[in-house]
Length: 478
Image (cartoon, rainbow, N blue to C red; front, top):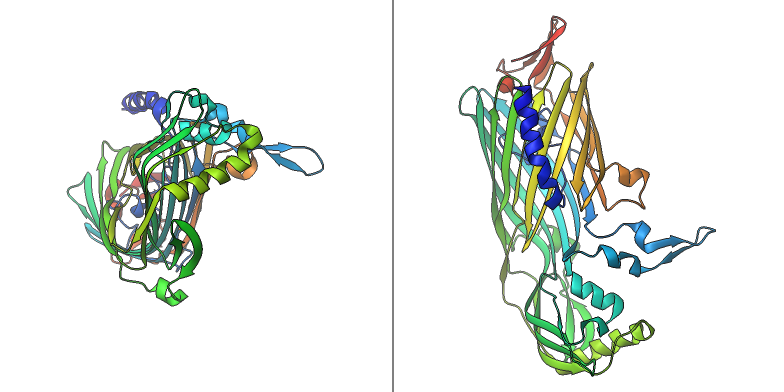
């Protein structure tokens, strides 16, 4: 069976050539940490009650891009002086270049396990930001339009997507039999702020031999925010607000939404577990503080963009667009969909102390698929200490070393995990920053004189998924 496990691993490795990355894969198989249930609702609670400390039970931050590191745009001129030069990213521009920024905080977490049933309720605050720029638009911004003489610059896939919402979630996990578990999570969402763009029929064409730039199509930005822009005759006037206070935003319940997560766990054999989940299948209906903007039309701009005219060109270009395009705004409600994510992998426990895993995921940000793969190893030490290490291919780089530690189990548990510890050691060389940590109270599991963990409710603990215990100087599963 060991051979079969590594054959599966090797079959997945070729996919690394087309994968670009995500986050949380290092944590995906840490079944003893209750917050792993947020990544797969089939993961049960360790045993009895679980209490997530408010705010600090789970904090997640992820920032990444697929086309540059700080080393490519910041140059050391000595004496602590750095020069910023954006032209360093030209050779690494992809067909679709993106930046992802996520900040998630668990405001409350409460779990309970009873026999074959497991429940987990959580309140989570989520901020997600995604921006995508096509390669041609990036080259146009860097080097001007002379390179596109007689042709069109492809701007498809360019856009932004920002959302801030609160999530009330209840997951239920059930043992289907001795080897399988199924889980589902229902989530009630309340949107706080949002901004999303849409481009349609948009073309940027440079005429030959005049170098005149022709713009055609329309660009739409929909927002739900208490601040909005005012235009008069296509000219920007000022920003105004809706007189909304902080409490109005925090307790805003007029942008409702729903979502669902689905999870599955299966013991392939006595030592190997498969885990898979589909997350964030849902939407939010935005109807409060709505300010939408639509710019459409066709206009020409005379002249060529070169390095020497860079600053003035884009100022004049913007003025020309505002003068010739039609700018309209409305307050019509709209719907945005969450970014669904498919994640799965295998974990194998080779002996009482050493395990290995492989995890891949695929997430859809509007029309952009972002994916990644992680190979990990874990070491279970005495006194309830577990150390995890991993290597990931993400954001078009393979030098992403993950590291994590889980301390304690009863009554307190602390965990600290990063998919890319490099960002804290060599920040100029990395394309991502990733960190997840938290503190839990787990009073439901106690250790008897024999060293065996038992639930306060005298129930079976995890049925072979992760219930490793110390008994008689050896490791054993329930």
